Image 1: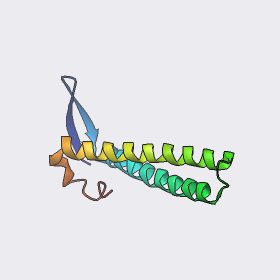
Image 2 (image 1 turned 60 degrees about the horizontal axis):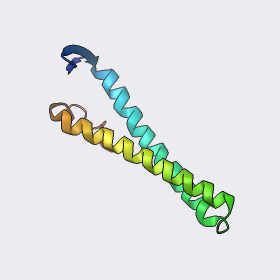
Image 3 (image 1 turned 30 degrees about the vertical axis):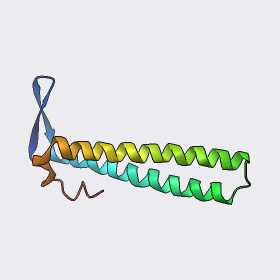
Amino acid sequence: MSNIPQLTQGRQVQVSEQQLRNLLAFISASNHKFNEIQVLASIVAEKSDDFSTAQTLARITSSMANNFCDLCSEELNDFKQQHPDLVKTFVDDLAV
């Protein structure tokens, strides 16, 4: 298992390739789950009576899930931009 050197606030730390793969997989899985929650909440909102509590809560949940999807995508995109040399190594992990 290879270690990936990373400079953090002026000091070098070692991160194993597997640790980084696990983190990227977690972010990717989180993105998918938040997307599923958003879709489900949107369906509940559509099927609920107008201006009902259920519709309001579903819309709030959908919005929150959408925000977390955006955050996950931003994290993956930031990784791609900040570490272009590692993108080839983690191409399958970054397929989101």
